[in-house]
Length: 214
Ligand code: DX5
Ligand code: ZN
Image (cartoon, rainbow, N blue to C red; front, side, top):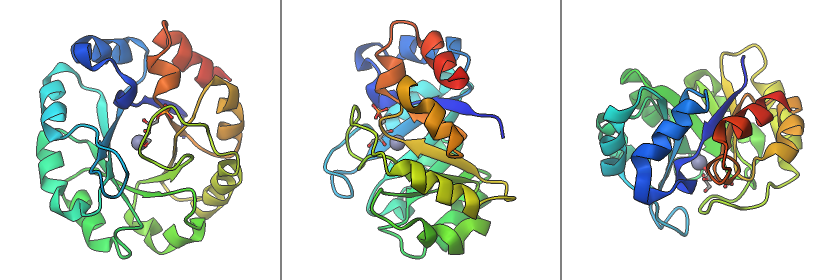
C-alpha cells in the first residue's frame, strides 16, 4: 500500500479554513484528517459536523473523520451526511463495535477502528474482518502538538503483523513529524496523520514530501 500523509485540521488556522484546505490540496495529498471530540471520551472539544459540512463543497479530499466520542453510534448518520468518506471509532467505549462498523460500511464509508496507547493491540483482532483502516494512537488523544510515544513503534510492528495479507490501512496519529516518519513507516504504518508538523510549516508541500521521502 502506498504511504500517504493525512494533515489533521485540528492544527489549522480556523480564521481562514478555506485557504487552509487549499494548502492541503496544494501539498499533493488526497486525504484530510478531521478530529471530533466530545469532552467526555477525551478531555477536550474540537469542532462538529457543521464545520465538515461547511468545508465539504470546497474540496474532493477524502475526509477521514476520527470520532473521539463516548457514544459514536448516535452520530454515524450525522457525520455521513456532513460529508465523511471514512469514519473511525474507538474500541474502548464500544467493546463490541461490530454493529457500528457494519453501519459505517453499509453507508459505503471506509470503516476505521482505533485504540489508545494503553490498549493492547491484540484487542482489535476479532474485528479485523470488519474494518478497512486500523488507527493506532501514538499519543493519548485530546490535544494536538504532543510528543510521539516511542513504544508506538513496537505496537505498529505488532499491528502490521496482525493485518498482514488483509486489505487494511495502518494509520498512526499523534506527534508524527519529519524526525520520526522513517521509523514509523519502517514499523509498517502507511497512513500518517500529522497536524502540527504540516500546518505549522510555512511550506506544507515540502513538509508532506519530506515525510513521504524520509
Ligand atoms: C489527537 C488528534 C490528532 C492530532 C494530531 O487527539 O487525534 O489527530 O490532531 O496532531 P499532532 O500531529 O500535532 O500531534
Ligand atoms: Zn485524530
